[in-house]
Image (cartoon, rainbow, N blue to C red; front, top):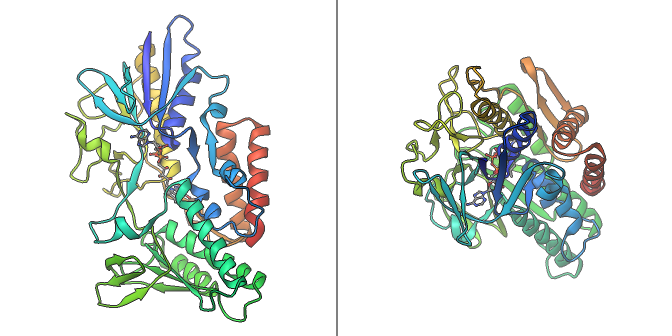
Length: 420
Ligand SMILES: Cc1cc2nc3c(=O)[nH]c(=O)nc-3n(C[C@H](O)[C@H](O)[C@H](O)COP(=O)(O)OP(=O)(O)OC[C@H]3O[C@@H](n4cnc5c(N)ncnc54)[C@H](O)[C@@H]3O)c2cc1C
């Protein structure tokens, strides 16, 4: 029995599992066992987290079941009918020499082939107060917390306990910060109308430490982003590194102290902390796993990495490939192909991962998105949003049946369009 163990059921882990299972089924005489371990019972569709955070004005149930269904995709559904075992557990130790992984419950899982797909964590850059007071934006719970805050805000206006606008401080002018700020901007307008307020119900400020928000986009596109954000009432503070975060304020390096009712941290990522504790795992100085072009961990023929955990230097730019969902998916495909080649003992040379990340589609509030496509072709506004919907549907179809995809997508559209 050949045992393949995949750690993490995010974009990279799922793709590896599904592709590998499909390929291995072709090998009639070889026995194999694919197991995926994740702490959650669902795959989190991070690109729509901002929608859950800002879904205001929908009928809610005490456990937010409807909202959860839009971005939490149960592994039981994804792996239904597939020869893939799923273990829901916290991974606590990886023993490379003994080829075994330990879970929180003390269970040991052995492997012949291992895939690290453990994603990343939010970086706090050791800024005092971030861990204690800033609200992270990475999990379902993070999104539901913000959603709850919006409900509370609206209630305060309705019952008269609040008359002044609430202050939302979003720290980090990358794609996530911009998406969230824009959607909260749309949401604030809806709250204002519903609560019949004369003035604003909130001020939303986006802080960026560097000279420009969205550092990787071309200047022309950045202007479009800024125009749209400003129209939605977002205050953009570039060149504003944060020195300290307090319970109800942030302090900039310039000395300015800005009061905030809700401080949301979206400034960047760092590798999963578990990696640093794994004996003999080759890591870069930033803590990512060093891989060969084939995505094999340096020094280990039977261990692969897919997604944010890998340090892969793009030969063209000499920079690390960015942490993106579709990068993780592409790497998962390569890892699956290469593990299959090794198991099937085919003479084919292992496949090199060729990075591609030149396309992005960023929603900027409501049914409006900026899509930077192949060759720099730009589509903005409603048609940009349509392209984004098609990309989401394509992803859902890659892991679910048509019926299930339509079911999830319909749930998303009906819930998320309320603020648009
Ligand atoms: C708010 C937000 C919005 C984003 N929007 C986009 C977007 O629009 N487009 C885009 O391309 N990318 C987006 N990204 C980036 C994208 O989500 C990541 O690049 C991608 O998820 C990386 O895939 P992965 O497989 O490496 O890790 P992940 O998808 O993060 O999966 C890692 C998995 O490992 C599990 N795990 C981790 N540690 C343990 C442990 N110790 N025990 C058990 N399980 C564990 C986690 O539960 C998780 O399921 C966004 C990220 C965030 C946070």
